[in-house]
Amino acid sequence: MRELSILIPARNEMFLRLTVEDILRHKESDTEIIVVADGNWPSPAIEDHPDVHIIYHYESVGQRAATNEAASISRAKFIMKADAHCSFDQGFDRKMMETCEYDWTAVPRMFNLHAFNWLCKSCGNETYQGPTPTVCGKCQGTDLERKMIWQPRKGTKSDSMMFDKDLHFQYWREYAHRPEAKGPISDTMSLIGACWMMHRARFWDLGGMDEEHGSWGQMGTEISCKTWLSGGRLIVNKNTWFAHMFRTQGGDFGFPYEISGRQVEHARAHSRKLWNGGTWPKAKYPLSWLIRRFAPVPTWDTPEPVKGLIYYTDNAINEDIFVAVQRQLLSCTNGHDLVSASLKPLEFGHNIVLPLERGHMAMFKQILAALEASTADVVFFTEHDVLYPKEHFDFTPPKEDVFYYNLNWWKVRVADGLALHFKAKQVSGMCAYRKTALAHYAKRVEMMEKGEYSLRRHFEPGSYKPPKGVDEFTSDTWMSARPYVDIRHDKVLTWTRYDPKHYRNQVVDWTIADEIPGWGRTKDRFWEWLKEVTPGAI
Image: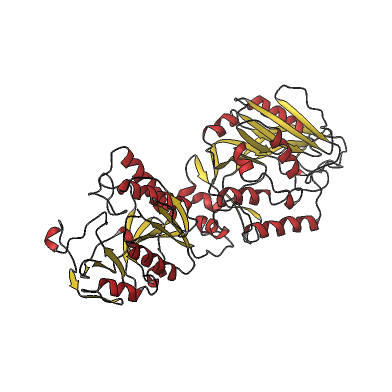
């Protein structure tokens, strides 16, 4: 198995040999080149080399089909698609592979390639590359020749790219000024199709190039949407570069593949169907998630975040409470995505079963698994012994790096129906952007496995910063119009004390009551009350 296969679909490419020679000169790894001569034999010819393989088609099959064919022949760990008019940095292949994770698509920093000048042999005047001229613009001489330069134009670097609301590729130079665009490895919303790399197995996981688009067109949008919406990451590796020659001036210096206006519109229509229409079957997220991920994006209105619920249970709870809570939850979620994580199989939302021993570690791993499976932008944490009102899910977090807690809650004791409230943050009333919660719980589980975690110090995310806390995330609060109800029973992991003296810190808004606002009387009638508020569940 080789390390990298560079796939070059080539049609009417006068600089193909120079591109191949450039790669051979600058590669530092076990890298091969697979050229698809798509409709014409390379001219000038490519010299024989053990690292170069050529597939020839008498009639053109198209850029996408040629890319897929070359990828099907490769047995390398990575593949890189490259245009046939590019130059590369020394060791570009090694530098790219060193930092490319499995679900990433990586592109090098891009420069414009100054491939050649037109030289007038009569007066010595040189003009920048373009279609073949008929006369010298200075002396009107006709003795002209192509003078090769083959150097990147260092003032033309491009790191940030996007597509607009019509799914057309655009450069996005303003994004480069954002903090998240700094550093040697940074995200980009989209890419130009001239050069990109990923794991070969990942390429096929994503379905290869979608030939329903037609020969070419929308390639950058296709690769970027497949990468991001499947749960991966599209990055620019600024530790290395490639230089691309743009052939957009028409004549004998235009696009290598002929394509009609009808074919262009077909490619764009298919692209809109896949991404705007949400018909790509491998998508984990909708296109709106990607727009929010990079918001604000020029020409796009920032969509409202998609909300979802994660529900976790140890299955050790009274069956009547279990069913009542689930019934109530389904009645007020407004169709939001629901992922459940349990220790035994459960028909509730998208269920994930983790065969673990009941405890805090199991709970944290269940939360992490549910967060990984969720497709929502914003997630509400829901528990198997908590009744949530519809109003609880009306809240939308204003910031993406903050955990938010609903302080309007009451606890009710099963034994006597006594209700309790005081001001405190509870994970059962927490919501946050999924990526923030995912980062936190991945770190928390890692710390617990290493024995570095203390439950007493930082149970609620965002409550403390290191060294007491897990990370630098902060927290804030909100109050729903109606409270949520935390049912206290004999199988809870954390006990509730009904005396303020039993709490280490001063308790604020301590209230003992016979009833819960908006829910009715609970004192000495817990089971009757539960039947009333969740009719048909018991």
